[in-house]
Image 1 (cartoon, rainbow, N blue to C red):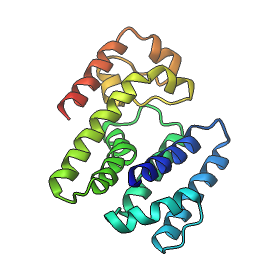
Image 2: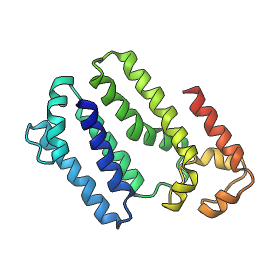
Image 3: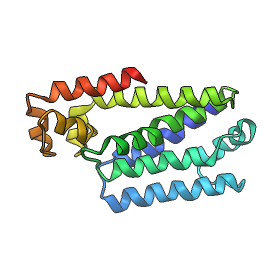
Image 4: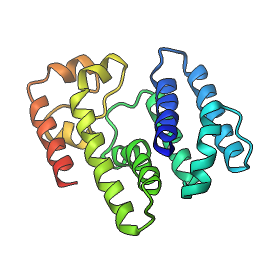
Length: 184
């Protein structure tokens, strides 16, 4: 039940970031979730998913900061991230993937530091893999997650999405990011 509730939360905030709506509408939806997380930790959630999370939060010590990190990651998505620095990309991955891993390992019943390390490494690896898988889909949404340093190191100075997708050095950029994912 805890994992179903965590998944439902992730799905809802991700859908807000990905919907084809004005930024103000996306921001309002994510702000609503930020308020709901505050209500959740005050013991008074009002959203159905927030109510479903109440038991798991109490039973497994799910941390408020991990829910908020995920919302912050969705705010980055909603703003149509484009060629972030590697540090920005790692922060993004921490927010949208590692935070989910931290919530999950607690739901699995562990709070050991080693489990948090695994959540971090696996979250980074999986999110980087998703980025590589979804380059064209993300570009259609106005997003480019490939890190600026890898683009520039391979002679891609533009952040125009169509130009990046056509660039002959794009496979080398992808190989470089795949190596980062593999190391994780």
